Image (cartoon, rainbow, N blue to C red; front, top):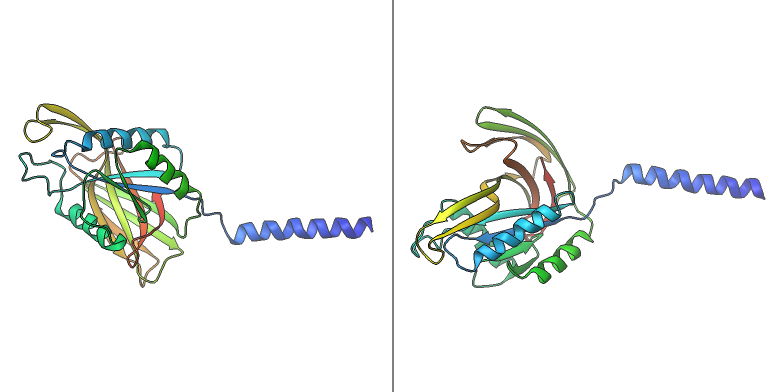
Length: 243
């Protein structure tokens, strides 16, 4: 009887080992997308909070992307980091979540839920909820820099029918001396600034190479590359990776 029990235990242990090898653990994550502007007086507290969260969770699967929208640029001060493409992305989220109007500072976590960017308790609860769920996609990257271009070899496991891979070029921090508008005469601190966002259609290819143009002042110390897979039917983020 003892030998039979030993055999059963060994069989179960072996089975568990094989299972874990075939199905790698897809750890939960939280991708926080902040929509902000230097022209918005409510935005600096959100910028500071997201910088604090980024630093606090730097060793965990929590990622911050700060998109500077352009619809504040006509209110007395043009945000040097603003981009019309980021405004369009925020409008896309409004359609995904059936919520209007858009506003700043808005934070969207994993493409599923939105929060006022300066409300710390709500954001932290959102992060806890997000990282408690397993990722749907697994992303691997290999990067090679050649002057002002970055070549990224990618491989994706687990996507939806209508998915895209997004590559974000992130400037980790910056300061701006705002001279006009709602934040006139203030020096603002920014964190995780999206300088460029590029997408790749994954309907056919789950692996390949994408070339990304880098900002003139790009360096590995002050910048980073974050890639994430998004379901374009629902807006949900399926997986994320820092290159």
